[in-house]
Amino acid sequence: MSKLDETYLKDITKQINGIYVRGDSVLNILSAMKKQKPAWQDTADFHLKWFFASLAGIIFSLRFISIKQIKQYVIKRRK
Image 1 (cartoon, helix red, strand yellow):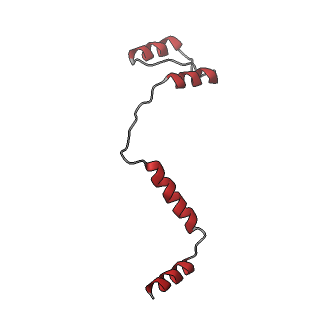
Image 2 (tube, rainbow, N blue to C red):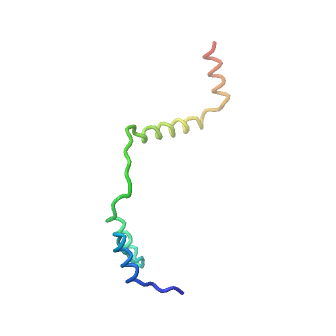
Image 3 (cartoon, one colour):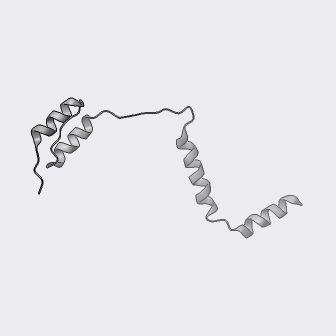
């Protein structure tokens, strides 16, 4: 069985500029997570949210259209 050496762990967290959180309480873990700054953020010039929402809408709509209906539509457009 292993033993928790808190003094050692606290010393290591000081060396790497970290925060030591004892994991026996969920509230302690959640409060430590809220205090932590994001590791990395990236911004895009193009808003991908609308692209993926549109793509999902198209795919969802295609569920209700059969290949036979698409072929009939293409044949009508060619005439």
